[in-house]
Image (cartoon, rainbow, N blue to C red; front, side, top):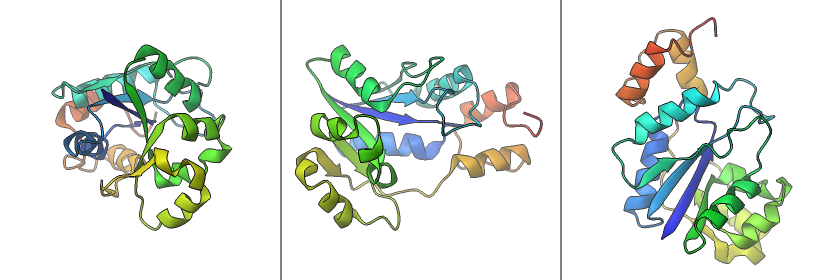
Length: 196
């Protein structure tokens, strides 16, 4: 089985996340997707909602998709690096192939990540193209790992969690970009309101 590891802050998870996951499965890049929300100790994100909320929202978003699941592996009180996450799933699924899903923005500086070159060497990377990123330059930069880099035909949907959070804070309509069960959960728990 080919398993795609889909990391991110998912703050909140929205329809683009689900659409990317569905298309990766439907277009036969992977057989299964595991969403892995980033822990709130991650140093580059200082506005993350509590771990349990983001975990619950992903569960609600994917509940009708049997080939998707969510993992709490990175939800610890210390930083968990991508290389450790991938290693964890490699050990958990020794007979399967582990794919790492990332945007061209992340791929452009993966060499600066902890054990980034090991990730390129040991895993298949499914790349989602972002507007304006130079794919040819990236492939040239990582020439020796090109067999592990798969540029997908999944189009980029220009949708940002930041914009969604701002709309939620200002009571603006986000029905078109959010799963209705996730939205209900957000309202029930008074998430992303002006005072939190």
